Image (cartoon, rainbow, N blue to C red; front, side):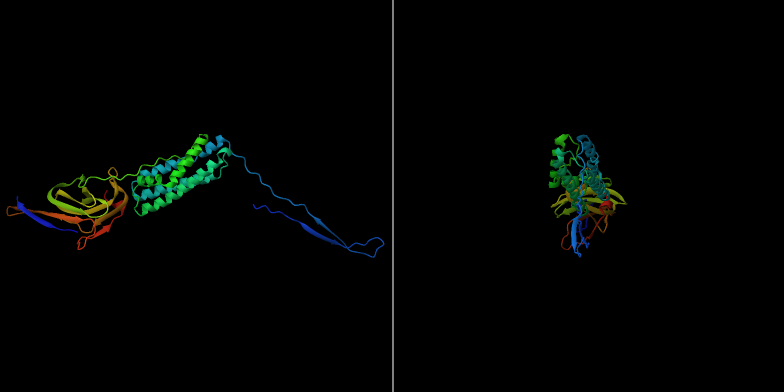
Length: 321
């Protein structure tokens, strides 16, 4: 909602068993007899196919096979390096492929007999971990998760990861075997102080902008002039923040909301939204007859009854971070 005000003053097997039953009937003449019937039955031998299971691997060979799957851990950790939503989906996809390959390779092994139970549990845990990644990718699509660290933090907090870590530890301890390693980051809920200015590239005017945030999440408001970010500042939920000294000009106003603000990434990591006000704001200073007047504006980030400023969603990868 926008409230303009003009002031004046002086100057985000089957084994098939062949049972051969052959009925033979023959009619032969007996010496001195008139003839008679003779019948006889013979059964062919039955054969059963047999199979020989491959021998279990030696510890050395098993260790080498396990090591070949360890790059999956590196691919998982690389999820944290994503800088856009598009690249985040791509990195999750690569991690899923790496885990699928590891599960297929390890599932076909015949491990040393003394670690067969641990091996089975480990492969099952890797498979479940991969399934969890698919669910997290959906969370990225819904913007419940907004960057790679948030994805890994939620993965690390899952029961699937707890099971995986326990099974990996058990296998490693059973014979100093190499396993997929991953240390997910902790989950955070970071916030900045209300009104914190994050960027001040174009300032030095008389205008002021007041932002009211009656929503359920903190927000960051960004003013863009001529395609260049001019000012960004933080507005906590349930609070108002005022930005003074806005230079004259026409600005597009963008805002992102969410939870856990990562200042280094300049973005919220969870429950993020990205929007813009459809109409620009114009700040103007007028000097006349020894007097000066300027524009002050008030914006409300949440929907309010009677509001006169519409907003639109913005592609997060096109948002001015």
